[in-house]
Image 1 (cartoon, rainbow, N blue to C red):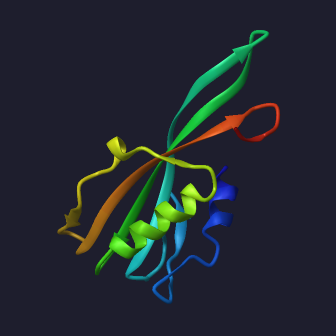
Image 2 (tube, rainbow, N blue to C red):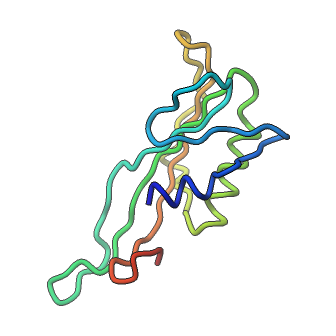
Length: 121
């Protein structure tokens, strides 16, 4: 799934600027970027003693030295356009990291996975 997410955000433009998206950690010098990580999985359908479908949960963290709201809106738009469902209750409050001087917002999402088809539900 990480490859799929990276593909979704390939050439991710927000207000005319490419915003890097990386799995767990961004290594670079851009003043705005997004990281993501899977937080857990939950079985939703078991048949014939085998897992048939599950839900994978993800956190998407937006970091920016400036206004991060346009990035938040575009992340939501891209993920919802690719079958992810937003989990508003998993969002963080708007944060400011005093040590790095980055504004920070975490968004929670999930997606259904069909084990037999190796794709989304």
